[in-house]
Amino acid sequence: MNPVDSAPASLPQDSTPEPASLSNLAHGTTDYVRAWSSLVASESRLARISATRLVFACLFIPALGLGICIALDAFLVTLLNRWLHDWSSCIAIVLCADIAVLCALLLAMRRWWRNLSMPRSRQALTHLLGRMT
Image (tube, rainbow, N blue to C red; front, side):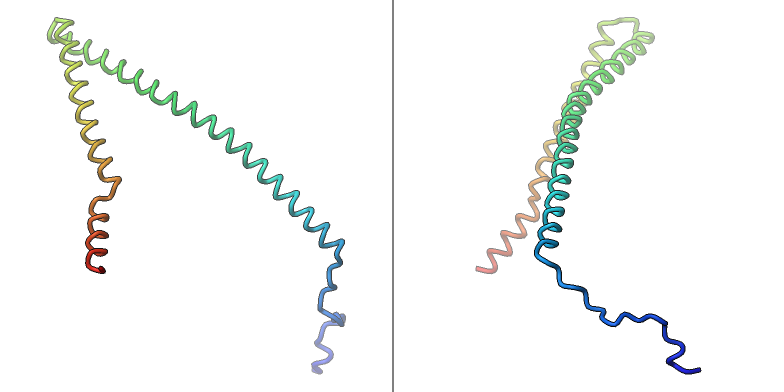
């Protein structure tokens, strides 16, 4: 078989692209800027909608949590009342339990806040800088 016979019938004579004219370049740049500005505008609308939804969620979640806490407290008071038969004692017990849970949560949050400052990393960095000088 002859290598000339196995070649494709139509080979392009010149495979280099034509140089773009100035008007084609301006048209392409204009299309690019128009598409980019449209993308920025649509993303800013989406960001505004998302921010509004986040604000509403930030207001709704604490209200929902408070409602759940009140419902759970009412359930616990009712349950304790079946055994103790004294509403005021049951309310006082649940209130003390709520205060204890709140104090424990505040102490845990204080510890978490301290961890955010990365004390060991800062200490190691200070030690390293001290050794370098």
